[in-house]
Each structure stands twice: as C-alpha cells, then as structure tokens.
Image (spheres, rainbow, N blue to C red):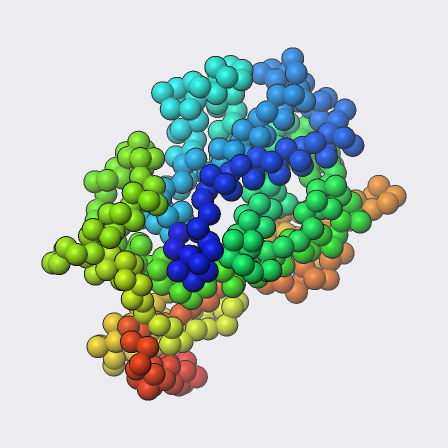
Amino acid sequence: MALTEYVYPGATHTRFEHSLGVMDVAGRIFDALARTKGELLEDRFRTVAQIADAPLEKGRQLVRLAALLHDVGHCCFSHAAEEVIQQGADHEQLTWHVLETDALLGGELDRLFFPGAGKMTAQIIAGSKKNLPPQLQVLKDIVSGQIDADRTDYLLRDSHHCGVDYGRFDYRRMIECLTLREDPDGTGGLEIAIQRDGIHTFEALILARYQMNTQVYYHRLRRIYDLYLKEYFRAKGSADFDTPEKVLTHTDVTMMANIVADADKKGETYQPWAERIRDRRHHREVYATGEDVGASEIKKVTAVFSRVQAEFKDADCQFDIATVEIHKLLLPDDRDDMGLVPFWLINRDRTATLFGDRSRILRHVPRWFRVARIYADLPPGEKAKRLEIAAKCASYVKG
C-alpha cells in the first residue's frame, strides 16, 4: 500500500498479513476444487515426477507455499518504488532468485518439504508456460490468475483497512462455485472455470477491482506520493539496492527512517522529496482526464502540461499518467484475442460458454483504468491561483 495511509489512515497493514491471507484463500480454492474434481487433479499431478508419490498432498503444499511466498521479492514501498529500486526488473524475478538459491529459501524448502520444492514453487509463482509443467498450470492460476487468491485477499483486506466498501464481495460463494475444465490444447493442463450459479460473484470481484483501483490504489494523492518516492530513490542512487540481498534487507520501516533523516540534509538532491514525504507537503491536482482516456487524449494533455509548466513556473507543476489493467477477459466484440484470456462459464448441462458472452456487466466495465493528471505546488490558501491553472488546463485541452 506504500503511503496510502496518507489518504486512508487505516491502511497500515503489512505484506506479511496479506501473504498469510493469500495462503489461506489458495488452500480454500484448492480444497474446493479437490472436493469435486479430486480424481482429475490427482490424475494430472501424478504425471509430474517430483509429486507423483503424493499428488494431492504435495500439490496442496505447493500452492500454499506459492501463495505464502508470492511477494517475497517485493522491495520496500511495494510497486511505488519497484521500477526505480529494481531497475527494470520486477518483484517476481527477485522472488524466483530467492526461491531457487540454496543459501536463501531454495535449500530450506527442499529440506522441509521435498527435493525440488523450491524450484517448483518459483515456477508456480513466476514461471511461464515454457518452464512450468502444464499439469501444474492450475496451481499458478489459483495464486495469480483471473479469479485468484492474490486479488481476492488484497481487495478484501485493503478495503477493510481503508474503511471503504468498494472491495467487498462474496468470496466464499465464489470459491464454492469454482470448477475445472480440461484444456483443449491437449497438453494435459486444467483450466479454472466457474459454474453458472457463480456468475454474479465473479462480476462482483471485477467491479471491486475497478472501484478499488479508481478510489484507492490510484487516488490522486496516493499517486503524487508515489511520484515522490520514485524521485527520492532515483536521487539516492542504486548503492543501497545493487544486489538482491540489499533489496531484501530494507523494509518500509527502515527506509522511512532514512527518509525522515534525509529530509534535513539541505543541498542533497534527494532532500526535497524526503521533506515532502516527511512533512506531508504535497502538490495538489489541478486537472484530470476521465478514467478511460485514450492515447490521443494522453498526447494532447501531455502537450497541455508543457504549456502550463512554462506559463506557471513558480507552481512546480508535475504530470502523472496512472494506468492499470482491470481485466483481460475475452469479450464478444473483441476482434482478436491477442493477450486476452478466455474464461469459461459451465452451464447446468455441462456445456461451456465464454464468460464474456454471458456477462452484461463485464461488457460495460472498462478493461483499463487510465487517467492523466496535472499537479501544482500550491498551499491550501492559494485557491485563486489553483483555479486559474485549472481553468487554463481545461481551456488548453478544449482548444
């Protein structure tokens, strides 16, 4: 949640809590599928040599391990600082390193569970179809698919701690309605699908994801503090994060202590960003596009920002484009399926229908949330100046 607590004071929960929650939800999903499709799961898992002796037991161990450790490679302040600290990599690559390295968690997992457990856990978390046995793809989908344990937990947990209702949905009912469908590509894989009775619970998850992204994760103030974090770490340089071990050493707590101390180091390039974070002295939004802005409007607003920045030099204007994918489910009007996922609804007669063909709600939820914002450094009392800049932004966009 990075600095979301600056907007929603209750958002002080940790990734540790979330990881335990994902493990619990993943176990519930596995158990629900095993109750109705246990023989099918056992048949597929038995063909994987490392777990052939106890296919269901070890399959359950693997999915719970993957859920527990899926974020172990995250740096401090979550996604906000990831692109700067991890320099083009992401937390999944570091997670893979941690789980495959004997001196980190790889050897410990192999010792506690079974030989190869560390590598297989890494494959489930961060592997692709090239290096993950197709029989185990279903475990990856349980942890991080279109209807998975990760987003189920963080939507419910974050909405609870933020004190909002956006992220809530009937996840217990949704889990009970999950089922399996044999992958038609002939590789022996299994796909997670949902029974017809569960259609509204999955629609509720999609709506929860849309609302939490628009109202919490990409809130205008949350975004400006994300920008400060990125600029702070960019100015600090890579010395504290140039090895995986160093990335793992730092937490939000240790780095916030550094930020507080750095806020007093006048003359350092990182000092102004640290001071803004410490003192909560943030820029204020003066213009924002709609929530599903297209590429042409983004280009226009980018040009508007340049004009406003030149005209109001004393306002220290900042520009931000917030983009997140809400879902990538295949819909009836899609002209191609590049990068899209067919998710199946199982009817009472056991025939399968594309979820996108049946769900009217899904057709009206934007696939992407994308908003461009212009900020200005104006104290709360300078409302007239703020309105002047906002009016200029609006007129430039229209013009």
